[in-house]
Image (tube, rainbow, N blue to C red):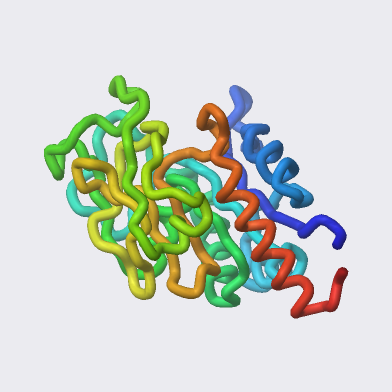
Length: 239
């Protein structure tokens, strides 16, 4: 069939002139294209109607990494992580809620996983190293890579085809309690949640950055594309 249309959210950066620009790490685009999808930049929208229209346009969604999620926090934000620009946070909330409500295939990466958990009423350690007394999980604090155990029987285990991963270490925040309808898919050796998912597989969230691993963990992107392809076939009969 035609490549499934995959929306990819972006960062929002303020220029020296004070203008706001959407920016995107090209590795996300490359990962979606390699997996067989058509990568499309998701614009930041300011209305629920526009978010719902994007659900109709995209066959799947990738919510990319970003700064701090502030809903459902356990503890206070540390000084080395910034709050998300309000425009981006509001848009990501609208778009992610719309996709979750529609059960449209979605992949949440790092901030994207944490935001989905907050939307579903879960909680989040503001600083998992400080609040849980665990190992360093932040690249900025010296973290590199660490093992992650994928739970047997999870959707993620079926996707990656194994239960042991070596993942990159890229986060200060981490999930404390999964939100409604979300199940743990993987953990680090210190117990930190590394993946969550819905039972029906429409949403998978990973704490690490699969697009930035060496080699990239393309399996999670191929799974998103496959789910998006099946959804498109059911909804509009595309071949």
